[in-house]
Image (cartoon, rainbow, N blue to C red; front, top):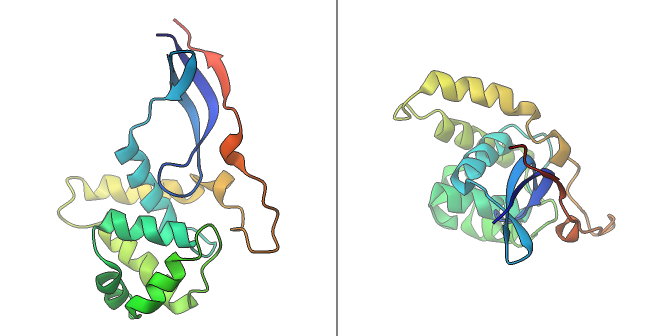
Length: 166
């Protein structure tokens, strides 16, 4: 098995595209596959979503709910909304959900509280990471697609792969 490095790789495993850089790739039966710490990517994604300026997409809302391990009703209650509204927003998929700005702000605050929970081992480190992550997803902070937006698909892009130095 050969290992190489992809300078840029678009990961779709959380339900929305995340551009990763310098990803180790492993060759299995002639195809390169990324070696990804999914939990680490999910943790970083939650932190980045808590500070993103764009509206949440339906897929991002679905990821948030799953990450927090609560159902739509429980999450809706925590952000002062209805379960029906939350399920409607999740149905937007790749598109920006028509979530009220106050509700979206409430959700971002809930995420920040989740990130900075006192039971986390190193709260100071988490706070520093949160501040550092404001620019983490800059390449992904393009405005979410709307029905009239370009429907180009990054899913089928081939990663830019370089051989791993030995």
